[in-house]
Length: 371
Image 1 (cartoon, rainbow, N blue to C red):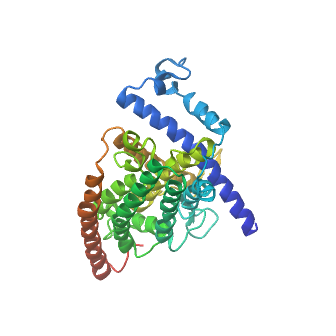
Image 2: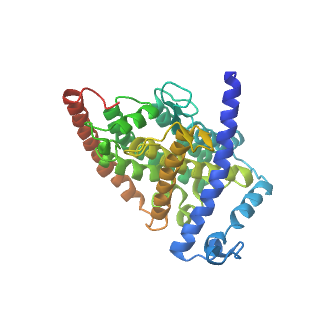
Image 3: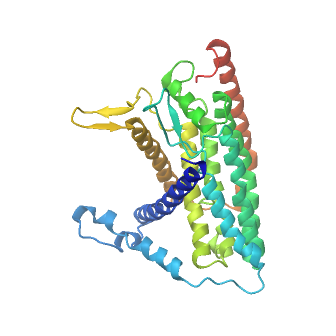
């Protein structure tokens, strides 16, 4: 198949997944919010004819109604804005949310092949570096939206977002460097395969969550800040900035910001799964390449099992982030900056030092990287 056909098919699949997954996550977050804070809307607006399941079926109508509203609302461009920047910002933020899916590995398969092949849009040798570089699109998009909107609240929200993202990108980068040192590679596929082999010859120590626990905690906190989710939603503080950098956006332009936020939330959970939770692998479990039940044969069983494991881990992390969002209050701006620079950054340095020591022990006494 020509390369351009493969690229177009992959792009279409990713776009469909982003749209459907965002709608599911909006519904799920509203359900969790309704359960934690006893909000009636997400619990009642929908079919309630399934008896004991009505607490989950209630709320189904709210997300489709909101999507239809955003789709058919009038697209308003205020007077005296920088039209080029105003229209470019939603495109930039959505491009970043789309492009970051390229190196994410979701499974592997050895069916009809001599060895395991990582399944992703493109298994880049510099996958981690690519992801860190692509996330700058979010900073540029938010700054562009705030600056071009000709609104002081938007400008303040954009400046806050730029400072916050810059402050928390550094500790997140150093937190990711620990697993990179342990694996000896920047490829996300290689990181998962190294975790499958195990550290020091012990499969249970394979997941980098164990040797790089500090890095996992730092990354998770920074990921919440990078996606502007509470308690780090300072750029979108309703009490101070009404809505922050996106206050002047309506209809589909606002929907693109909203869609990118939920897409980025899932992306950081997928990165955490691949880097710290072993990706599509489980300790002591290797699915066969095909499942033969005698009367039925299922090829690519290892691919399907790996995808199920990977997405189960990723959605478990999504539930954790949603739980955090509806539990903790928003941080003050000075506390947020102090926490990032004076606490998380030194912790990420400590984690990197521990990982360097462990990688040296592995190299000297156990013959190189686990993979």
